[in-house]
Image (tube, rainbow, N blue to C red; front, side, top):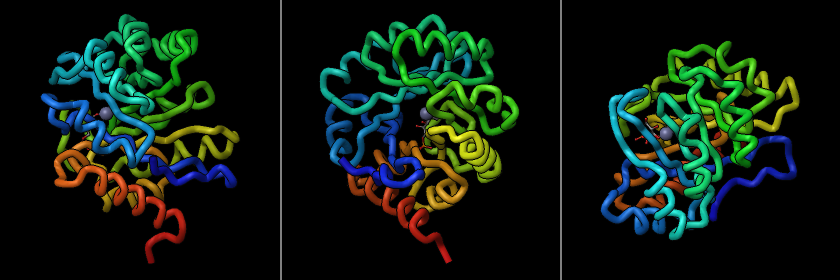
Length: 235
Ligand code: DX5
Ligand code: ZN
């Protein structure tokens, strides 16, 4: 397992969360096994054909993967009615769930996730402002700044999101919060440098991992680029 452990500093741990959306769904367990030595998180994209125009997986697939993997299951709920499905995902083996702030009822969803013992994440689409996230920053463990509009893998990174990432990190630091700032969409060995500089520390990557010949090397390359940026930055 490779992360950049910063336990001796205030800086949050850098980690890559490979997204199985770009993996071969016919052999998911094999795909997960290939990246497992490189990380401790796995990103699971749940889509309902309503909040986003695509359908993916539900609790049965999470439960099946659970028996093949000990990674932290970081479950991204791109669904209109997450309240209905939080418990089934927890029971299936999700460790953390992330709901979108755009679906509303955010305070109640956060409470429910806590009751269920889930790690709590809150996501925002690229055009959702920082102000929508701000009231909840001290109540969540993770903020996910989408760097593409959710729904599909393989889209181009939207750099306009960088100032929002920086504001989330600055607000968390100012309040002394131990907050993971996750980014998702178009992340690769190049864009990870920009998001690291802005303050992100969890990097979801789908196509830049599973569309490569060597997914493990891809995970390690993304993490190394982030660590290099944090260590000294680009000239
Ligand atoms: C998109 C999903 C992402 C997706 C990212 O809506 O939330 O997790 O897998 O894919 P890439 O890394 O290919 O942009
Ligand atoms: Zn995602």
